[in-house]
Length: 189
Figure (cartoon, rainbow, N blue to C red):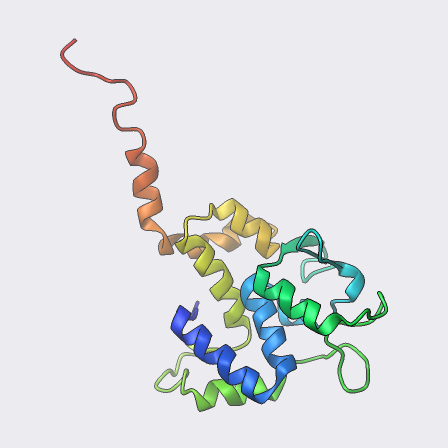
């Protein structure tokens, strides 16, 4: 359930950019679009619609497809590496030209150098690549995005998977109920 603060995310992306542009770009994509590592690695240029800021995620973990929506940062990053690639070409190919099968060690080494996992023994609280996806969902919930919308963006089959983020926005629930105050205007009348 660990997610990054904005400061930690900036620190991590800056450090990754200094070590590996590709690892940085894959991390940026996951952080701002909620993609799993495998979804990033299997992405081809035909799946990206720059004009609509949409990424089509085919056959995700749950065997269903969905859309991801690009932020300006993600769009700019992808545009910078596009260079009129073949539509069937992978966006982030391995050195052999095939889809990568695992996250680069650069990510793990960078997290270690930033000491983001120091003092943490429970593996569920350690920063790993999947933490970027959790951060995406957590930030959305903290900013008031309804859980149903977060579930859709994450590609969750059921809302149950997304409910784990509900505790991050208790004020949204209070505000929802507060919106009912005065609806009937019950008074002395």
